[in-house]
Every structure is written in structure tokens, then in C-alpha cells.
Length: 155
Image (cartoon, rainbow, N blue to C red):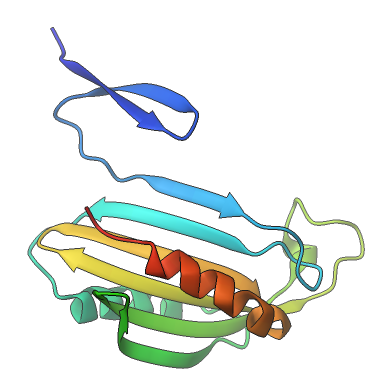
């Protein structure tokens, strides 16, 4: 017989085998800013070994570079302290061509997006906090994003 644990995620309860690892992905979408809805994606993962936040960030950066995003540009990267927590942050921009997105509205134009990724690592547990908005709307969203990161922890 399989032992099932009940896990609560937002408004749902899910039965999960007790020996399965939680690699949750949580996504929140905000109100429109400059024609794009900013979003927050939080990914919790178990990894092999015990990388530092900088090592984990380096792996994530390599995957982004391999993705060959149009006009990909690193804006900032390095260790940052937010509240009492030390994160490794990677901020970058790229040109998103909404016309190539199946769910895009007709006539959608390419837009430069900015994404800030904050990484926390504790042993084999990692947390990636990803904040995305239009590059032109970052100044408007920066206080909101800062408040989100300030309230984020790896428990």
C-alpha cells in the first residue's frame, strides 16, 4: 500500500506519495503594466550535492544563455542582502516577440522584458524567485518586487 500525504497548495489539496520530492512551481500574475502583466514564479527544488547560491545561479545563467533569447543582456548579477537573507541575484532583459506566442493577441508587438531571479540555497533545497515585467515598467514595479523578495524565505 502506498502512503499518501495531503499537501495544500493555494486553494487545492493534493494527495502525494510520501516518498516523492516537492519541486513546486507557483505562479502569480499582477495587473497590466505597459501592456504586459508582471508575474512572479517561485520554484522550489531539491538538487544533488550542496551548491552555494552562486554556484546554483551560475548553472541557471548557463541555461539562460543556451536558450538564445533575442537581445539577451545581463543587467546585474551577484550577492545581495534583502531583509536578513542573502540571495544571489541575476537580472537580465530580452526581446519577447509576443507574435510567436500561441496565446498572444492578434497584432501583438515585440516587447523588451526584464527578469530578476533571486536564488536561495540551503543544502540540497533551492528556491528561485523570478520576477518579470516590461523593461519600461520596471521602475513602477521595483517597490512591489522588493516587497515580495523581502517577505520570501526558504523554510
